[in-house]
Amino acid sequence: MDIRTLQLFRQLCVSLHFARTSRACNITPSALTRVIQRLEAEVGEQLFIRDNRSVELTFAGVAFKKYAEDVILRWEKLQRELTEDDVLSGELSLYCSVTAAYSILPDIITKYRAVHPKVQIKLETGDPARALSRIVNRDVDAVIAALPEKMPKHLIFLKMAVSPLVFISSRRFPGIIVYKNGIIDWEKTPMIIADVGLSRERMDFWFAQNRLVPNIYSRVTGHEAIIALVNLGCGMGLVPRLVLEKSPFSEEIVILDSVPELPAYEIGLCTIQNNLTNPKIQALWTLAGQIRKIV
Image (tube, rainbow, N blue to C red):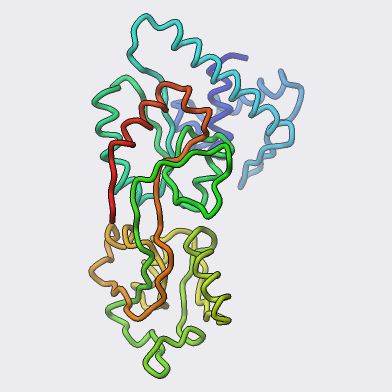
């Protein structure tokens, strides 16, 4: 069992996909399979449940993941201590939405790479609703996420942008909005909503307060999917304005007036408090603190 094996195991824990892990780690799928099989033999337990469609961690796999992360962190700390100069090196892993990768991350990473060119940036994009769980599970070093109503105690948040939540509809299909006495009939107008996440929580709270039952056309993953379906005339939606402005459909979308004003979306860099003892993450935090955007 060596550091490379543990790093491959950790990456597979994140992706839960042998092919994606093999591509990310420059190893053939068959070689990766052999590495995991040898690891399971050495541990004496099955670490993954896998078939042709899915890969999942077993109970032993979850326990071993904590051990692997601890060993890798200790190894990286030792490497830093043994380095003769103060040049940062190694790997820094980040997770954010596609929109954050386009709008917030570039300024941070451009400055970071200029100061610390030997640090390798690993970026994964996906549903912003998953961001906090990724950092809580220690799958990545830091995430760009929306500030939740209640922040877990061991996490810290650095606000990078503030974006209003806006109700939107398609410019090409104005008839999709149903009005009653000059205001939107929320129980008849079809809505595309996020499956989970902060915008969904705030919208649900407003509907509950006003004792309304929304006419839900579809539940989707991610704000980009909401905009795509709104553009097709499937209904109205609620998204952060920052996401709308970065969307390829922005010219085809109308921001609705005379709608409830929900609390704005606060977006920022988030990590575990103890992670700031890692010089690579501390450097990222310091650089991010120099950047502020109000959108």
